Length: 454
Image 1 (tube, rainbow, N blue to C red):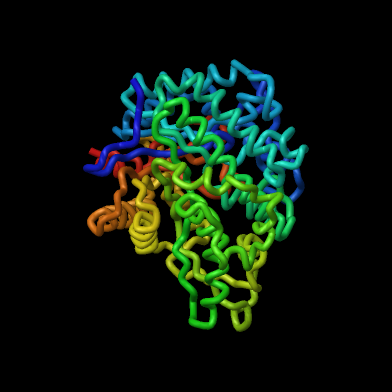
Image 2 (image 1 turned 90 degrees about the vertical axis):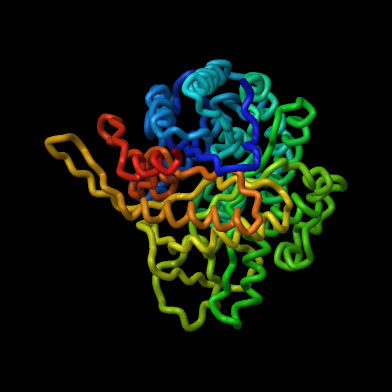
């Protein structure tokens, strides 16, 4: 059985996770170290000083998780492959025990009628490649394409819906400019080098996957609607749009970086960085596009805004004039504005811009769940999350009615897990995971979503 991009028709449904957030087993079966293993050891990097060493223990409990997916009745499970589990040094020696794990996972899903959809890179770069320059150097892009083919050679007989990169904006700009994600560097404008090499990595991998008749290859972008808070902020908002959205869409659709982007990222004019043929390779390389959406972005000028804690993305737009971000109410527990209209607008506009089929590859909400132990067992009545999901699925359907070719909607996330720099302090899952014994307890949102899927 090979799974492919859902056909146009009724909306298909799934859920999503990421390897470092759920797998655990970071030192088992030959897995190498990743930049997140290293970053979590840095004092102050993670809010609760935690890490993904155990996470949800999905490395050992994947059958249990597959049963949860079957109980939902979803069509898809979007998971990510841990690059250092397959190639411990990022290149060269292949760790077959790592591939064996993904073999078992794919077979477990297929046995339950759930389509496997792997993401090849969800931020856990092998530390050995970071030590050699990470995404700031071209070699990492070339190593990624080699790694993609190693995975395809093992799983490609059963997998036909591939995502190359997840949210390269976070990898480039939160990782190499803002410093709040691994590898935790603050390289300023040089972070644009990472962005280009991530674009190149996608292009190189997509070309080789297509040559191998791998199926449908896409990329998951955390594009955002950019809504300047007032007219005076329109210029900085254009810079934010360039760094957040157009740095990816330009190469994918036009094979070019536009002048507005180049004005804030002049390093992208460097012919030693952006070589002849790079952008042409990226253009048209995606068969579909994934949209990860949580909240709109409202840029403003810093003056006049109330003083307070710096917005975590404030350093992640190198080259843009000093910019502030307004977050309106209502907000989720992680502090993100709830606005389904942003997803509707984003889907309509991205389809217009790209002409590609779309999948909402991530959408969900962190709320402070109340866990109640009663005579009938444990319950989590997360009505706030249900309201969020209902509003955003409805927005997806409105976008489809307006002409956007949206094929599927994936909830983020199946399990409460390691939420990156927030550690275990924020919960996005529709299934509660007890940190002491890993017991899975479906929340009210799990039952609601299962009803919606059916």
